[in-house]
Amino acid sequence: MSGPRSSQFSPVRPGSSPVRPGSSPVRLAARPSAAAFRRRRVAAGVLGLALVGMTAQGADAVAGGLRFGGSNVETIQYRVRSGDTMWSIARMIAPGDDPREVVDLLVQAHGSTVIRPGDVINWSGV
Image 1 (cartoon, rainbow, N blue to C red):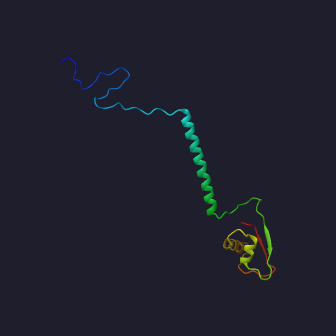
Image 2: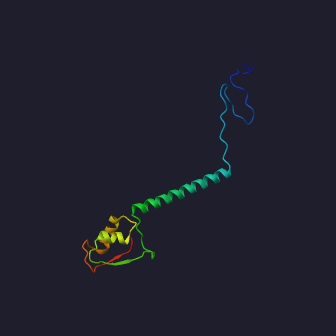
Image 3: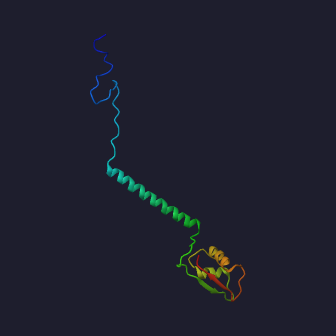
């Protein structure tokens, strides 16, 4: 039995690993280049910023577009005239907005749903 071994295994060359007959060697994936890492980081950063932007827009939509603080808010003083209603005032003050939401804000600003000629409503456009 000191003769050659059975032919099940082929001799191993230095620096290589043994492979069983009938099977192929498993190749490890090549390591991505530094440029590939940079591209992936840039793509992840862009996706992260997009996610933050969409989250901010969603929060703004949920909050109803409320503006907190700042001096960019214009305050309107409206003096109620005879025949005015909250609905007509809302349509006049904010023609492009949904009147129902503006009426709710006017009621909050005025403190009451009842208005009389001569009342002053201070509305900050929130």
